[in-house]
Image (tube, rainbow, N blue to C red; front, side, top):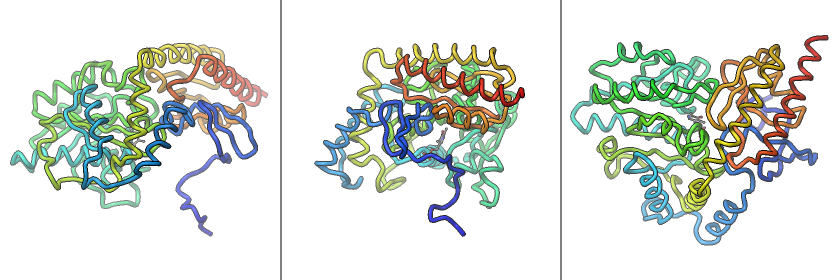
Length: 394
Ligand SMILES: *Cc1c(COP(=O)(O)O)cnc(C)c1O
């Protein structure tokens, strides 16, 4: 018999009822160290007092009023994002998939408004993840996402990851854009080398294409810069953002240059909830914290220690772990043992991790995690490794 909640998730046997900073507390009052952060969402930890205050304050004034009116918090957050990035304009929505939908529509509309509607194809990459709508599963293309949902949205060319020659060969008169995650998340924490991002930027300039980044997971301070692509200096024309931008409140955004957004005129796009006053109050509070002096330096500092500790674990337990990869606090442990087994052992040690492709366990702690919590996580990971090794060795 089908469960009341549509059974599309294989859920771990845990029910959390409370959070405090990097800790999750379940029904039995057991405390778990949260290195999943709701899949890179709770970037400032759980129940962050500044975010709670911003939400409570706004909740007493106005929850929702529709985009038929000016929303001051939206203007403020858009102005701040424009000042901090390559972008000239921002559309607010509620999720990553919606941010990607807006990105795809913006790219198509750019060319159709220029009188080149035949230029509508978008190059994407294997191992990518862009959300669960028909357009975004069509963009990613993996069978595990698309099977049974055909007919898919046409117009995507799926290329192997990390093959620049394939990109050059795929660009044709119908190509509009290249869509890429600067660090693949669901695909198994695979960073795109900075040189490759710069090469993609150059190809887009050469052929008049739009470069679209999906920074839904790798953006918002995760890698130690506000956006992951900043390490390369190769800016996009359009960028999808979500997850960390709301710190746990549902919020997404599509950022674009004035040129890329040239077709997005009155009536071209919309969202009932997108950028509503509650979301904007929290979004502005998240950005307040993230732009404070030293915040991103802190991310790099704790990330350095975490990575070093993980590298040591892979050396001590080569039968359990294969390698560490990723950037900043977006790290992956590629496992030798089944990743589900590893994450289960970590859970038994009361440490929360998230699985990804390529048998990788993701570590995505809150960005304001303290060094002592990183040390505690490393102790718990060591316990998990030791237990697996003892069981497998016996
Ligand atoms: C999570 C994610 C999405 C989809 O976001 P939703 O909020 O689940 O729609 C898109 N792209 C990337 C890179 C993601 O990690």
